Image (cartoon, rainbow, N blue to C red):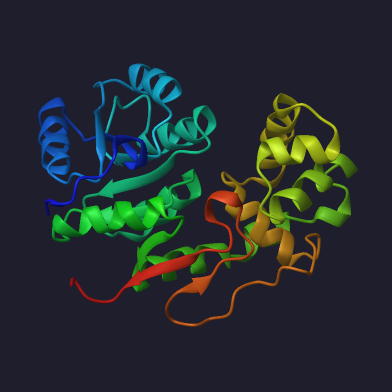
Length: 261
């Protein structure tokens, strides 16, 4: 997996890796460090210290095991906190198996990719490259899990944006998210502070019963709240454009793996 070309430090993405135990974390970091294109950050073994490190270092990529941390702090909740502490960090969830529930929850938490331990280790570097380039890493089965989950009627029916669930200002925020704007850009457009935008998003998530910007945007399009200038993607099998997703996943191809090559 080693990359023989020397990449300047300022061009190499900083990667934080956190596996299920301190020993496996160290092994994962050492294995990935052999690839000269990454600057590796070894994670502490508890969630509080990890979040503090994320806030300080602002890594471009975080590889987080689904079994990381204490039982009281779930790894999926940890991913949500990472996204709050460092919105520019793209998260890859390391799963023991590509089970439906784990895959769906990973993307709901805000992950940009899922990587299963049953896959060849050499593909993890490719996964990291794709996610760093703004792509979503998932195979066709995993992507189908997510699409089926998003199509479930209970959540879809709860997102009645025109029926009074959201305030006018909250609806404005949803429209901005659908355009792919960052929190800073939303704040500038709506003449708010970034802190106020974050508070609006927390309330929107709570009212709609969702856990990620992706769900908000997709259902906003489904309910006609988002601008029609950015249509939902077509169903092409590979390199699909995900125009409806927020900036970290907006207008980017989805990497769909069909074989372990």
